Length: 371
Image (cartoon, rainbow, N blue to C red; front, side, top):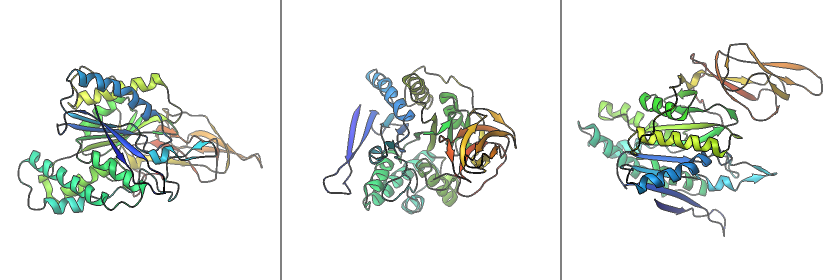
């Protein structure tokens, strides 16, 4: 294992943070797989899962069983890790700008396309190599102009990952079952990841809006394919993995999750081993089919249903009680499908998002990601 440390410049005098990337295997070898956790720095399940994965990678490397290259960023957001207020970790949005750490990654397709224009031929592997090199150059050009630690941190992560074959960004939800987000470009990889991690549903979308980290790796390939046609291969597989809820943090869970990640690494050929997927494939459903359930009034939230249940449209999932008027209103499912997440807090405001139900029918278009 070879560590690489990048020091962020520091926005205030006397302050400086660092990012660490741990490199396993052979530099420049394929496949290249990149894993990170803690981009939302108040989400710890993925961070602990990577801590359990690292000894497995150490052992595999010592036995010469990493023919590819595996990069692990165990804590992707040192800025967010330091953001505590009122004895609570924040870490989802940068405090000065309120910019979500997992939004606003740069659009690289135009610049990368200009760099490869006229160079692509009939060899998909050669074309993939040219495009990866162009994306690396495009990131370097944008990174040279970074003016804040937040942007510099985002672009450092992107510089490590943009030419990878597979990118996994480990997150968690408030209260949730294991689920993931992916592009429709490589369904076999999505199925493999579901079978390795035990995801209950894969939410699929070409472009979700917001320029999140995972789509910073897939959308450029989509846009280049629209520009150059079949000369552009499918490119990078990237996924955001939601490791259940914020309180689902234990060594037992993390050890199982690390074993699942190891099975995925074996499955894509980055590691040699006999780890096999232990779970069935999950439904691949449109992200726009994730119906959003809103609070009918402000008050105290109680739930009759739990993540992982199949619910029907109109079903009462819980209630909101107004403590001033004693009025108790039902929370109803907007569609039929898998109740895969609930909000953590037991109080709410009127109109607040409280839950999501994954279904087959598209209900929403446009910007599909929450803030």
